[in-house]
Length: 422
Image (cartoon, one colour):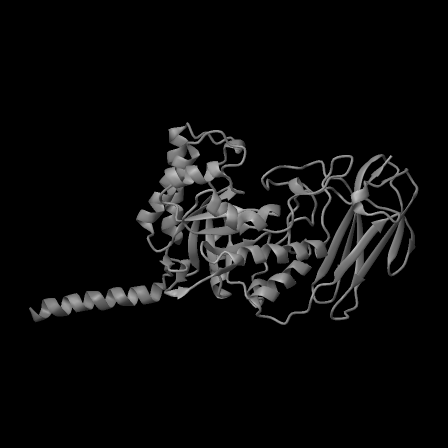
């Protein structure tokens, strides 16, 4: 009897020691009298997150606590790197899109996808950086086959069976009543609704409740106005906001996010890194060279961890004394006079870079990969601290002229001006 007791005590101690060594994180959702709350290892955990896997040191330094991925490529390294920086990971599972050719009537393809995810869950479920699982991103974009929601439910149910320590989320492109209805009725194993939203973010808290979502939600992508909801030139290209205008809108957007204390569990700012989408500067909070934009100063002001050196601010950018909203056209070879007004709160010395590009012809939807156009050489006629005059290209067509203003602390202001050569 004594030996059996000692044997069972030994098993208990060994099990306890294993749990301590593996350091498995546990994420829970609880409902209080004030609404839903996320707990991580027993403590309240509001997500101050970013979508992306780079510049983790900057994210941590400004008070960010989590990153979001869209798939499990390089997941081990991403989880390890995040853990070293004290960050959690919302690990994405890239569920096949109908618009990319995935057939949800093909039972074998659906089952194979489920089994491949099962292996990923088993591989990463005990990593201490794991916060939750994101089952698919925008599978509702341009879709017709509602069976995708059965597949989402199958994956989420499988996750709950294998890994009860981390909740499940699926992400939609914006929000509408039909999507909410489908997920509520066909995906009961989804714990959190993720919403990617841009210009409409100010209306999101009301829309979530109006459309009948009763579980918690997160804003899984948010940033400047999307290219599809921005003003257009007369020749049909989207007009991009300056880095200052984007920062101002991010401030408005974040106020909307934190205003919902009942259902919203936090957010992931998009995109924490660089991406060519419409232009090389539209969505990234960093440039290709790794310089941080003013939007990061906005996040830092809310998360309040670091008295960081601030990015330069571009207040004006004109062509021939006209704004980018005026659909400016110029003749071949004629002089283009660009005027800009910039200041830096820290009085840093500034470096000005300029780039001329033809308008992108490789434009996709839903964030699919796009190839950036190659910069083209241009002749400078005059240049000062507030202006640059160049010779218009000799070939007709749409162009953009980019300005990058850098300080010596890896910060940058950006703007571009679309114009047409006729």
